[in-house]
Length: 89
Image (cartoon, rainbow, N blue to C red):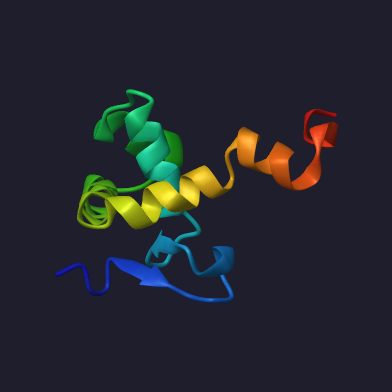
């Protein structure tokens, strides 16, 4: 369904799903959307087409557990647990 719109390359962003032909990750778009930005606002921020943003949001909604786990993996609390309080400087 999203063939050609979303890609995963192990050598790009640690294999995270990205919008094909860009360096923009699905997780970045999901985070922006969850912060309250509209798809139109995301297109302006990242210089993407509306179709690209909707493809990323579609992937996110079809694979919510995967994307949310990836977001949590880099959360401040997890990073502090892994690396100590030096994360905050």
